[in-house]
Each structure stands twice: as C-alpha cells, then as structure tokens.
Length: 234
Image (tube, rainbow, N blue to C red; front, top):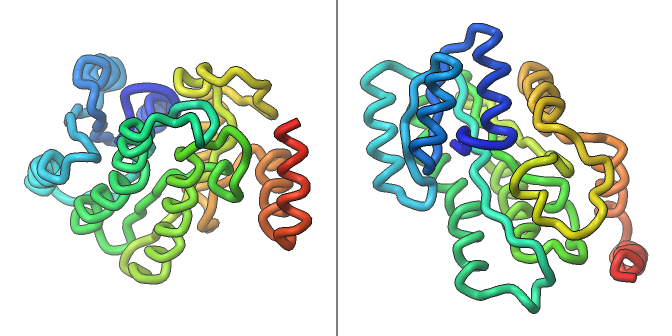
C-alpha cells in the first residue's frame, strides 16, 4: 500500500530493478497505473481506510497465489500544532495511519506464505511527543506499538518488521515550514529499507544520526526528556 508516490514508488522501482514480481496498491489509480506500467508491475487500487476495498483486493491476490512480503507505507499528514488541528482532519489521519494499518494487517496476513514478511511503517516521530508533531506522531506511536505486538503474536509464521524513517523529501514533508534535520532522498530511503528488510533486524530506522538521538531521548526519564523537548519549541 502507498505505492503510487514518494518512498513507496521508489521502493517499487528499486525492487523491480532487482527482478521482483510486484503488486502495487494505493488509492490513486491513475498514478498507480502509470508506475505499474513503467516498471512492469500489477496495479491493484485499494484504500486502507475501507475494509471492503482491502477485502476485494485480497481476494484478487489470493486467486493468483500467496505473497512473500506485504508492506504498507500509506499515510496522511498535516503540519502544525496539536491545538490548532482540525478535528475532522485529525480523525482522518487516525483512520488512514493507525486504523488503516490495522485493516491492512487483517487483510494481508492470510495472504502471506509461511515465514512471509509483514512490514508496517511507523516514523521516528512516533518515538516521543515532539512539538509540531500533531496527531500524525501519535498515530505513528500507535503503529510502532502495533508492530511490536504483532512481532510476538504472529511469530514464527509471519516475519513482522517495523520501518521508522526520518525526514524524507516527499510531497508530504515539503509542506513543513521548518528545517528538517538529516533530510534524505526517497531513493536513499528506499535503499535503506530494502537492505534492512533483507537483514534480520526487527526495526529498520534511519538515518541513524537522527533516529539514535531520538531513541535516547525516549529512554530518558520524563523530567529530563520533557525539559529537552521544550527547548525545541523555542
């Protein structure tokens, strides 16, 4: 899911170049079909916020056999402070990012071959509450928690992985009006994801010059961690 643009599209291009047989899915049919035609993949439009849409897509996939990997990168984002967030848009972000990941899991797991890989995309923004994180960061914290739970619940039949990117130069992040530390290209992000998913690591997080300090911040006691995050507001 989320293959029509950004990191998902670049990931598809790189895997196709390695000879992988791909089924690409996203809500955007025209962009999805263009990419699928470009790289010789099969397009299959679906919406993670609509379980019936996913069930229909899963039925079509099941007719052709099982999946070795199922990966979702579908996400919605709106920059700004939490108190200024539009409630309807906030609900939609939860629906796509968190509930959508849940719907994807329920549809994708039965399609996986034994030992197949299920990858959910969180974010380093989900490690700890940060200024301007809005509801997006909260949903990504939920995805991280979901992936941790599934890693235990589904083992050893399913190889659950968590992808936690930092700032990647996409249409989504270009809406930010602040300097994004360690900004990387979608091509670099996709390369790191492929390398990580081919390794034995549960979490693929990058770039480490950003993800490791945030992991450390998360591990600190709240009085110290919150004092440090308050400095980011200034």
